[in-house]
Image 1 (tube, rainbow, N blue to C red):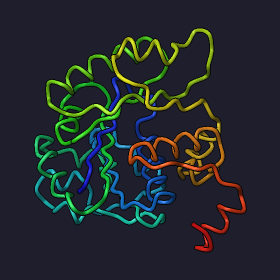
Image 2 (image 1 turned 60 degrees about the vertical axis):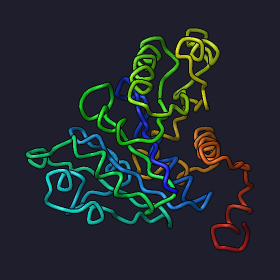
Image 3 (image 1 turned 90 degrees about the horizontal axis):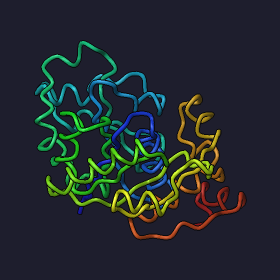
Image 4 (image 1 turned 120 degrees about the vertical axis):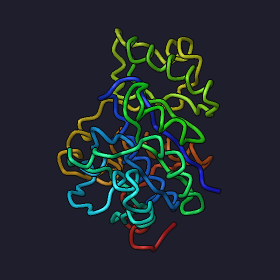
Length: 256
């Protein structure tokens, strides 16, 4: 059974796209799941840029205008088991896009993968709401500050009204500074569990510059370990921190 999980946030810049790229990669590379990640942020699409994909003849935009089928917009990534449905980077491809078709379009991926991750637009506008309605479950991304957390409160309320199951919150860019909200404070305010906390990690910025997920760029970095852990928690499996030798052997199929 395919699980469709929307990755949402109240504000932009909190790490939704980074999370989709890295958790999708972790699920495929480490946990050997078949994963499709979808850029549902039509107006300001970034997912393909994060992955170094600059040429996509057919995108979600063409699907939502009725000019192509969803399966024509699926591209293999170089990680076995991971596929990508990008949105167009071109402004002209916004013409004729009917975002209300997103739910029925995404449902056609049922049976095509173990997990489909949807990268939503920030906020509660038409694109974000369409992504939420297309999801079976939602994971909220927030930073440990009051404005970001307040937006999650609103998004949580809307998710409950729509009938989508909230998984919890991923706290991102956590620095453990005294002025940051604690995990307990975020949980009390949002009335949702904090599923995991991802620390501030310069390796994430380095990986973005290299157009590769940080879980591939540096699997042992602090952020990578938490992305692997989150991926495991989403599917109820345990992530074990591996030594370099173990990773080397597993990469070449010599160890599980």
